[in-house]
Image (tube, rainbow, N blue to C red; front, side, top):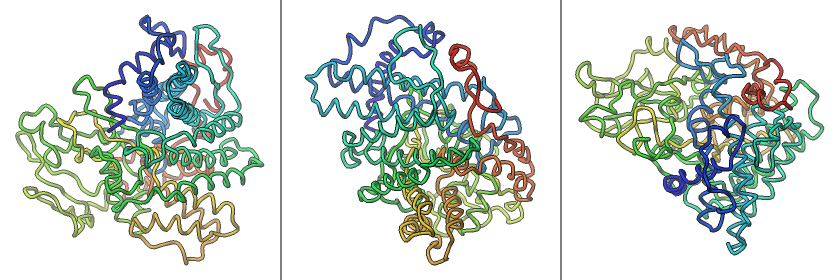
Length: 577
């Protein structure tokens, strides 16, 4: 991992530099050790610019963001997912959050830390004009994009937020009012557009941990689609520019498609195997456009591992990380421990079943459980597949047994572990009980295609050939029947896209935001009670009904108490909090 090699070598100095000059509150300043390193003595050469840029990227891979907390506890609160514990964790995921919630508070904090680091770099990138202009322009573009990306996450979560476009220089004057989110949208959109000519092309680098032109365009499309649905959560009239937002979303996503740099990997699971196996688009087809990179197992000084697969994802109920004779094994012999906090809902299961979608259904929801010896180290003996899920093409190494659960038992247990991120396929060892090197997919080409189809459908009286082409490419990769030829109306096609995005992008921190921008969030969550009541929802997991009991307040995150206590210009919280 190229950028992770940078992280391995530079993350400590990058964070040290950032820690010296990053001040996000009085309280945080008081926690900093005094250092003599300042901007006046830094940013003198390419290496120092690259080091600090690594620090600007750093929040993305942290445990508070894509490394664990965000896709699980914050963005994981949707109709496809539930927390697989009867004792809820205080979070959006369990519908029991509040303004002092740890996951929300730390997410706010690290987003503003990333913004402040970007601002520091932007203020110093031209300090040494002997550094080649093209190099400085590329560093500047990445920093500008990342600052805008962090602001988009703030707007998605909180709506109006303070807009800080210069670095914090003092413990005084930190109060800042919330700025209208439409002003922030205008700011980040124009900023990202200005960066595109200076960013890497996807062909310039062999890994996906850095922002490229394709990533910037795809994220622009995502921003425009979310902006087009803002009126739903505010219960106001549609924005007069709504159709223009769809047109811009289509334009930017279509540019990614027409670049011919990207495609869909076959089989579907290969995307997620690459994330676990420390590979980047290993087939040569660039489906993964941007990833949050994780590395190692935190067993050394390297602290770049996340928890994908351990909390959100699939692994073993037995921990071999300290067991002699097993801890150094890999693959099926040591699948890696998982708490399995995230389970897929019966609604998602039935989506796959209704389409005959075995390619995505068998991978996104676990299709088996590990079988263990009853004594000793309880080593893995093999796998027991749920009824009908042991496919004829399934091949595993010799020495393990593969059985199948009965139909009656399987039908009583259709709520199964979210399994896109499978620890069995990690290649870094020995495996840690809790920390994993599995990357998180921030943007995939399949998402780009579905955004084109959705935006185009909103711009035409009936589904166009382009819209059908894009969605059916995703369906063809899944091995299911195309939509074209069914004579769908505009509304029917919209509903089909909603279902397609669920089946394709579940557990990728996207569904919650899709529901909000469609105006479907509260209703979709509250009607999940009907699914929980069905026989196929495991009887021991009926507690999940409480985790869907959300109010309209959950269209936003609450402003953290820690921010309101020090920022006196924020005088009220979001509605309902």
